[in-house]
Image (cartoon, rainbow, N blue to C red; front, top):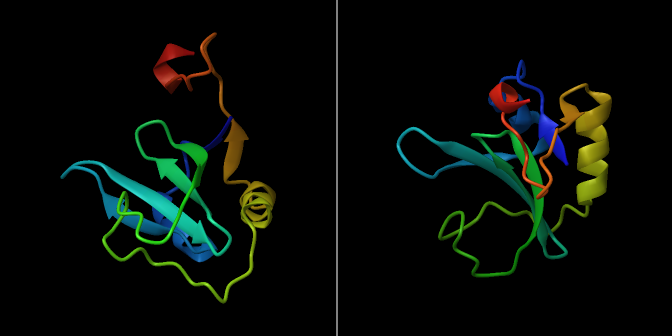
Length: 105
């Protein structure tokens, strides 16, 4: 699994087309939708990056998600850009495939 490095400000993701959304008052997650039906979601607590399916009318993020259908960038291109910028690292996982918090490593 991949995760954003602990020393990276999450607002840095805006340069790569990510948008924020509130889960609770204290938790903000980030997402980027792609025209062909998937999105990258960054879960703030673990800083884990997930690739999820996405469809029109999907209200998990916003009632009106900020998706640009003219943008034909793929998620692997965005992941490559994040990796080459030094923002991403491989996350340690437990035996069940769950990402471990830094304190659990």
